[in-house]
Length: 258
Length: 59
Image (cartoon, rainbow over all chains, first blue to last red; front, side, top):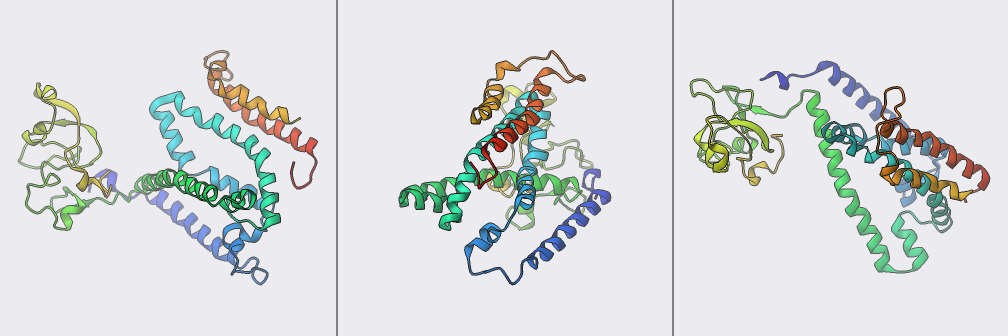
């Protein structure tokens, strides 16, 4: 197992500590308003029984903002492309006046009429099932890329702890998960060919293309296998630097290799 | 007073206003500190509007 796959025990300990702390606090909070809560009502599940005051809401808004998007995606974008990533700052600043102008009215209306979701409010106000459906569908659709971003962010965090999820064989070469499932035993499957981490050099075979992480990377490719899939224009020299994607999408779909 | 809340939109959504390196502040180019300065400014503006609108169930 290479260096990058070793566990970072300090980071892992901090992560486990806070994970345990938050879990305990969550169970503790569930007893917080026991007795008064009517768990049969959607208000309880969706809105905390409409009992959150200023302080709790303040922390909840903080929790909404300081996510993997804020602490990983945006800094990574600024690091990668510079000032353009700063879009996130004006965007966040102008969101607050909008919320300040709209949300108190929305809150009052929703509370007075017992609405739980934005779609409920729209139906209650305008009486249109289609408009209600459009609002609900827009909300779901808009949430999906955000959730996807959070999952990728979690992947980054977990890998930073040293939990890379890479499989290695007896020679400590990375093995694609699909190969473990016997889906490409023939050796002809792309995920069997020329596979190796870029920091790995198989013994006795010379240097081969390092293509295991599936997402396109700049690598030095010297094997015939690698050259075959590359643009001939890129293969003129002895050493070739190219971005290539040897493994087909079917093999890349699980995303474990990245 | 509500018109105060339009100021951050004017100040931030037109990038040519602040797409420059100088004057810098504590070594930060204008582009960065200008945008960050709008965080406390917008908070203060919102507070002023909130005070003027009263403490009821909202505006």
